[in-house]
Length: 352
Image (cartoon, rainbow, N blue to C red; front, top):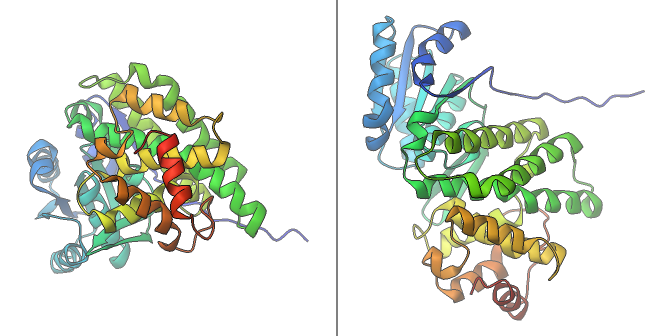
């Protein structure tokens, strides 16, 4: 008897395009989320889009309270949970980049309230995924959470975001290349659950962005459209898989390890991009596709070397040697690299 089953959690509404910030209220109304909103944002995103979202909600007779967070941290999640309970919020609206949306997502998950995701930067696929990532001291907590019930991504707003945030989002998408290869390897060697559909979607998203890299330019809404659509696809792939596997492998372990060794120096997506160059080399060898990854990142203006990241060469080597210790996830790194092997891969790919 066939007994396999799955439960895929996806956003019910996704609005992407010029001027769709005005669609927050229609999305909330259509989903019948309730009449009391808690808007979670941070200082810059508040001025860029948060106040406008609040004004539109209040004009439509929603009771609205705003929480402004300064950083992504466990105590910020706790403060949002407390504010939501005090105001008896029916739903949350996360307005911002990674900080506000991840904090709101984790808080909403804890209290069982839906989240409307309103990104102001196309910096990572967390704008739509069912994962939340919060750093605390030298550890980054990545936990499962309910994906947003709606995503409202205004390309006019996203096109005005700092370009380095967009290139970080691009690098995060391109990392799907090695994440999927790690996933397949884990399935073959460890029997890890694997979804051909989710893997194909994640790979297609990465390939699309690599091919389109020359046309992705600062300040262009068309570029913001392409990048945010790719981020949505990547997030959907994770929802289909029921894990972050389609978009997180050895390159993410490398980045998480760098977060501990050199905290706050480089953006997560940029670290992941540099990691992808090296992990592609490990997967495919000298004649593999690592140069295509590097060239696409260079074309986008994303970092491809330790110097670009502002990271010391020895920190890159240490991260490679110890990345397998970050979490129990089988990847090309296996049980760890020797220091000499780490130096070789980082040198051959030009990272150090």
